[in-house]
Image (tube, rainbow, N blue to C red; front, side):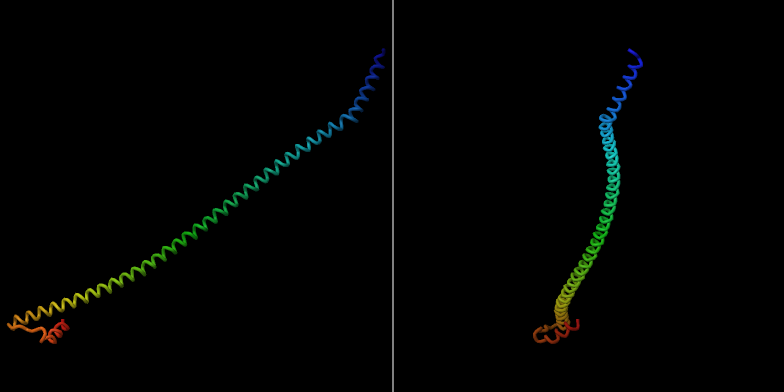
Length: 156
């Protein structure tokens, strides 16, 4: 056996094996690798999209939170304003009620003062008659001197 013939035979067998692998084995392996490469690239792109969407959602949530805080501030301001209005209305109502009660009390006081004056006038008239009786040392009849007693009451 000759080394050259063996070497040539091995070389031909090797080239046939390489051609067979290039023709039938290499394309499915390359397809699998390309599919895997594409799958990894799609996964990375999806991760980037997810990160971008997360940032957008975070910004949107911050914006919604800011709007909610502003609306709650507006609602609180409106509530404070309404509370102030209610307090003012209550003060006005209380003032009107106090004025009414004060006027009623004044009317009652005026009536009591008038009654007291009338009572006082009659007592003073009686005292005046009693005093005049003692001064004159005689009895003055209240029925006969009614005009005189009425004049004295009116003067007092």
